[in-house]
Image (cartoon, rainbow, N blue to C red):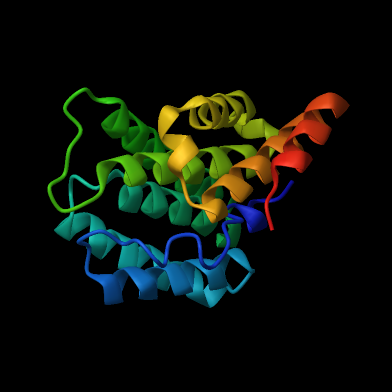
Length: 193
């Protein structure tokens, strides 16, 4: 698994419900994020900078912090020096960990956003990032744990089809890696078109 495919969320996943964030800035950040995930190294810094601006103007928004962290891990993909690669990935993972801590806080609320939707999507970004990292980062179990929490959440039942499909696709990858064919079949049946 390479860092190249850190986030495999569909392009429509987050475009419809952007709560009270600056919709134009958010969509632009997502556009560059998608280009970066597809391998466009020139888009990586732009996406990171845009998410950094969104974090600065929305400090209580766990989702944009998770995206900023995910983009920083992708900067690790694009760095030349091994110590730079590790530094970017570690810094990005720290941001994602902080985003998870935010949504797990009993008082997590941001009047600018749909907190329920935000926490579901934050977990999906975290799980996807963790599960796509090379094994040397020891984040497979953390990614699997986040995915399980997401799938078992009461909030997940009301999630958009795109979010559910991305979570099920991740669950299929985890089950395949663990050789659990029964789970592969179960999650393939849950995928919706």
